[in-house]
Amino acid sequence: MNHRSGFGVQVLLLAALYLFLYGPILYVIYVSFQIDSIWPFPPTLTLEHHTDLWQRRDYHAALWNSVTIGFGTGLIATLFATLAAMAILKYRSPGSGLVAGLFLAPLFIAPILIGISSLMFSRTVLGMPGSIFGATLANSTYATAFALLVVLAQFARYDWRLDDAAMVFGARPWRTFWEITLPITWPAMLGAFIVSFLLAFNNLEISFYNLGATPTLPTLAWGALRHGISAELYALAAIINFAVFALFTVLYLLLRLGTIRID
Amino acid sequence: MSDCMLRLQSVTKRFGTTMAAESVSLEVGQTELFALLGPSGSGKTTLLRIIAGLDAPDEGRVLIGGRDVTRLPPYRRGIGMVFQDFLLFPHKTVAENIAFPLKMQGKSRAETADDLKWVSQLVRLTGLEERYPHELSGGQKQRVALARGLVSRPSLLLLDEPLANLDRELRKRMEVEIRRFQLELGIPFIYVTHNQEEALTMASRMAVMREGCLEQIGDKLALYHRPATAFVAAFLGSPNTFEGDVVGVEDGRAEIAWHGHRFWSRAHDGLAPGLRAVCYVKSEKIAFASSGAALAGRLRDTIFKGQYADYLVCLDDGHEITVSAAPDLCHRPGEAVGITWAADDGDAFPAVGKE
Ligand SMILES: Nc1ncnc2c1ncn2[C@@H]1O[C@H](COP(=O)(O)OP(=O)(O)OP(=O)(O)O)[C@@H](O)[C@H]1O
Ligand SMILES: [Mg+2]
Image 1: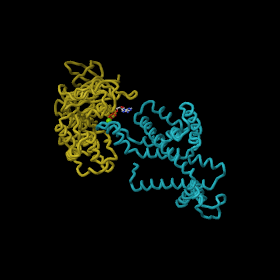
Image 2 (image 1 turned 90 degrees about the vertical axis):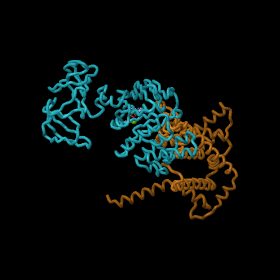
Image 3 (image 1 turned 180 degrees about the horizontal axis):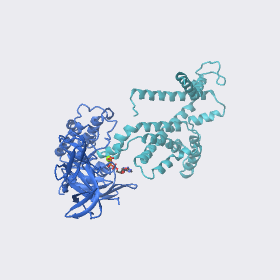
Image 4 (image 1 turned 60 degrees about the vertical axis):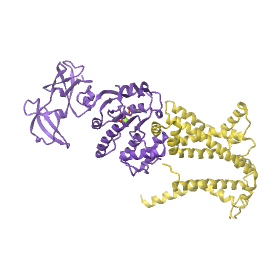
């Protein structure tokens, strides 16, 4: 086979794949800057939708609620996932597989079921009305499973005998974690935090059932959809995508500059 | 032992169906360099991990300085250890790695600096302090591991094959130095190796391990010259093996018939006339003899080893025997030679598993 034509095919495939992944997102960003969002051709640029969105107070509250739920879930899920992964891999025992399985099982439960059942549980058993706190806890049950997957994948490559070495040289368990385990494996925990933050931030079903009238970005957007796709939803999607791109660019630059090392 | 520092009392450890340690009892004195020798998988690392507190024994007790530490976690035992695959902390520099035990002891900056300087000179690491482990050669890593084990002047130092990755010259030098540290520090070293020369060079006493059991334990010369079991006899030195029939046993000696030849050797438990026996004779204990030789053959080849040579003697009936002797004996290939050894230089054991 001709080497160069093979190369051309690869480039084409790659371009097609990227178009598939990013086409819809780029389209949304494009539309958010157009006056006519139903048929945005030919292009007529405007910032109107973005300024409209900025003035909608309910979106501010929703953003704040989403960030709170995302952060809370990120912290809880990362903490639980780290502890669970250490139990499974560091203190390996015949029951480790079962322990891991029970932690990962929520992956197979539809989020909407988690939403409904956690609401009923906190209402009936705990007597708690829906709240941000309840929504964070309910999101954490789901996100912990994903976070555990991320942490397990990285911890599986960690040599736990380094912890043994630290203990022989006088480090107590906490000190061992702080001096050895954490500095080497923190990218796993950062990854778990980002994944569970995004899951909770973007979550509709679980948050919706647990929050009632309190808005988050997804529940507000979902509510707005009932009146057709309004232009400010395009602006919202565009801004969130920008934020995510910005975050990844910063992470990438930090990695390149060597401030963060992932070995 | 009056100055016993470490005592293991029938320590047993199983991994599933594997017996990694089987009723191991051991005493190591205050100023001893004790070698633990055994083939791969015989349970040497497991035993060290039990002493360090990293694995709990299924049965038995561990005593350090007379105190029962069986249930004590590793960080309370005050032991130093040099791990088989170094286990240097990858995110810490050489200096931080070596200083880690001092940091855990809460030593002051000045004390740490003094100890670092002392130990870096001792293991010749000066100038590498700011490097990270992945920037070091295998031998340098090993020396960092050694320094980290020594630096806190522990009450007991466990060394798991600490010289396995060094070149010959550095190994010879480190062997001498490890012995010197041990004398200077006045603490017991438990030195694990599967290299018998290393064990024989460095140790005062040693034990040979096999499949989780201590086969024999004692003075290194006793183990070498007076093996108590067939395994030890076969494992130490490079012995010739003769499997034959016991003709007679008397006075602690046995007469063995081997392919039409007969010779005497020291008899171990369980030998009786008519049984099969395996007799081990170390190659350097066999000598060339011009008259009165026990066996006759021809020299097939000479393998020059430096300080000595291995002479491969092919007996008239086709069996081959190795004789180690001075390299300058002027025997030529094809030359007829006679060989002999003293009765006390052979060790005969009952043959097992072959009826
Ligand atoms: N964590 C473990 N789980 C299961 N089996 C183990 C474990 N650790 C050791 N073993 C087994 O116990 C036996 C002794 O192992 P050990 O590591 O102590 O051998 P060793 O004498 O140090 O060998 P080497 O010279 O190769 O280092 C081996 O059969 C090994 O497979
Ligand atoms: Mg080992």
